[in-house]
Image (cartoon, rainbow, N blue to C red; front, side, top):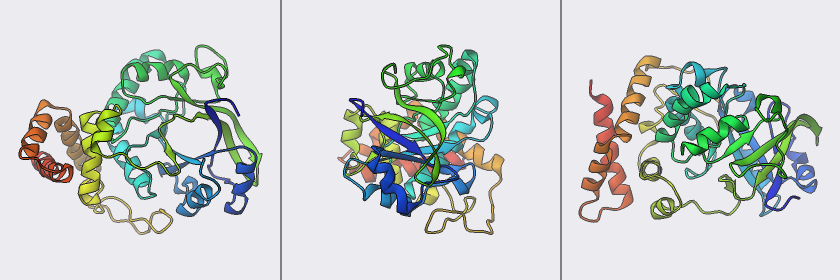
Length: 319
């Protein structure tokens, strides 16, 4: 193993069977990555797979991926709002901590202009909506722009190194500081699965076994913004329907796959309007004013969260 890094593999369609995960651990892999939410549910990790991986050792970790369809971040930067909500709800269902990063897969080459404009807007929308900074799967030159803008917890570099202006494969020995996760080979047949492999820093903000979820004060002292820290409290203090309503989201079975038939009672445009209002409010000075008002008198984080969630509901309902 390279100092400060451990091998990582990510599961997709042809996954390593639960009964053979130990072979990956014995081969030196310490982090298993996988998808929840977005894309196709056939790629999603199950609770059984996650539990089996964590059972192999105290030095194991889970890295969260979220699949973006096509060119959405470029064609529709506003989709960062709904994507962040969908991704967090899907991973929370699996017990993934709110303060751990999710990696949205921007699975295409982007120009520097697209990274500075559309991609930056997309991840600003993601950041004001989610409870932790993301780890975007994007080429290195685009990744440094997002890190510099303060809207990324680091870069997950694709094996498609020709996308990057450096035209070199990123590995631990040449990875710049902002790269926290490298994909080095695609489609390797290992332990009965077909997986992508690489390395991830031991400091990466993913779910490491046994690491307790941070409380509100911990989050604020560890670089989370006030908005991100309080959004985490909102998630903990309020029904999931406030953020990811069962009225328009598929119900999931024990393995987290959609139960059919699914009935949607909120139109896509109505939902986006509601989410946009929420994001605008959270990004405004009034949000902080309302938090301070709710905190007057020594309210607990959950009480503060409940008070501000009530305001968010009011904001979302306002025409």
